[in-house]
Length: 104
Image (cartoon, rainbow, N blue to C red; front, side):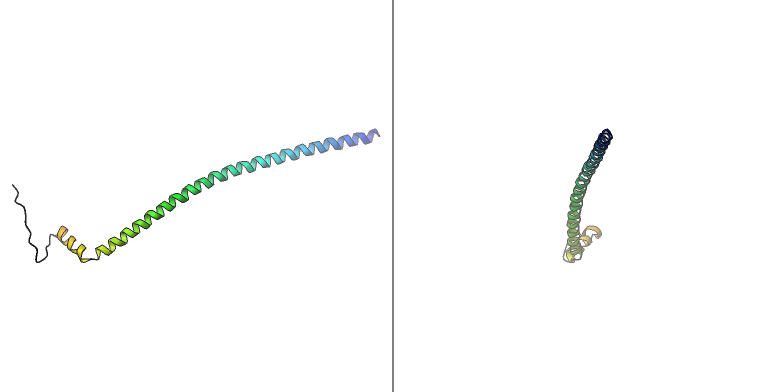
């Protein structure tokens, strides 16, 4: 019976060592998962901030596009052509008179 007890004690020791190893492995896996989760949450925060920034840029570019389309329409009008002719070329309509102030 002494041999049976020693064998039973060895099985108990082996079982305890196996349980300790299993617990350590599970603990390491848990730490790895926690670390990965923390990193992923930081990346998610970065991506959310980047998405918000890109959405603001999209809105700004859409507003700029609207302004350019309005300017494109205005540039095609006679009013714009007359304005440029007067300001840059110094031209007048036939019914207009140019009056210059006398410099003193």
